[in-house]
Image (tube, rainbow, N blue to C red; front, side):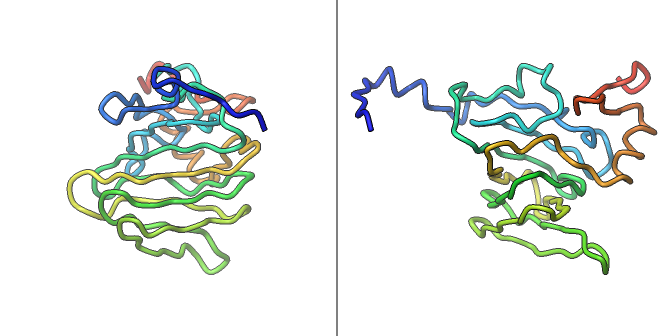
Amino acid sequence: MDVQNLSVSDMEKYVARFGALRGSEEAFVDSSLPGARRFKINLIGMGVVEREDLPDLAANIPLPAKGFNLGMIQAEHGNGASLHAHQTEEVFMPLIGPWAVVWRTDEGVKELVLQPFDTIHVPVGVYRGFRYVGEGKGTLLTIIGGPDAGKVAWDEEVLKKAAEGGVTRDATGRVQVSAAAE
């Protein structure tokens, strides 16, 4: 291993200052659905958003990370992400407020409520979602494994409801918003 001798200014390239973080409420196909409003902050790593055309969704630390994505979600009470899956595992840790993590089973949707700093690992192949169940605005830390999370796989009902509102995805998985939905 080559040892690096980094100055303070060199190391600053690896820092995302909380007060200057960029993000967007329009990151995913479900973003305009009731209960799915949230602010996605991409801190570092591979892109997992569906709106690559929005500069505010670029990684806040623009250096390559090796096979993971670290991000945060901020949401008001009752909002979060609809049922979805990735080709890799995902980890959630509430930083502010309690968050419910939900997942789909043959018997229906199940739920666990996590308190700040509780951590859950969701395995590959599990349709999962989350929502903020506290007061005010909550913040959830998210880690998506790698080396390639692929595109988000959405529950078919989520895609149907989004399309009814004028939001679809193209063949590459990028969000397409009709003029009527804007």
